Image (cartoon, rainbow, N blue to C red; front, side, top):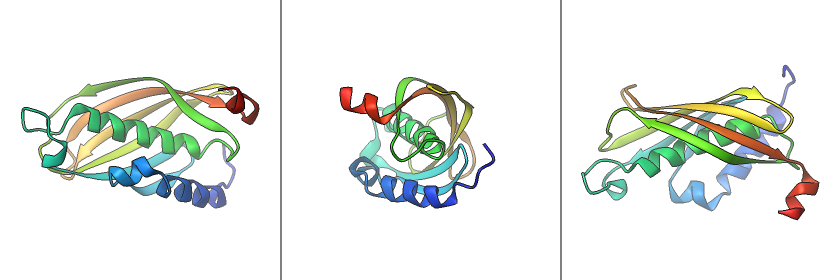
Length: 145
């Protein structure tokens, strides 16, 4: 995995920036590298659940996005990396501020890959930890879906 994919990463950033979901949640990519992505998301009252803390689904969205962007650095533009399974552990509540996620691919196979994400608040406190399995779909299989 020691190839220089920097030009491809500009394409990854363009694809992410064009995504309606990323714009909806104001997800910003701060850093990407081979099998790695760091994203930031402002959170506050609009994402609160009934106990006045950020809803777990918001954290799960960021975790999946971090790992997903990390996956995009390892596949070609013609391939799709899709989530097939995800698990998240919520470790601390968050009321407002920023949620920062770091996603890493810990195993990248031909078809399945395993990623993990750490979500922290703006002070570095660990809020959640997630793992996810992704499947790489080649162009021929995408048309069949």
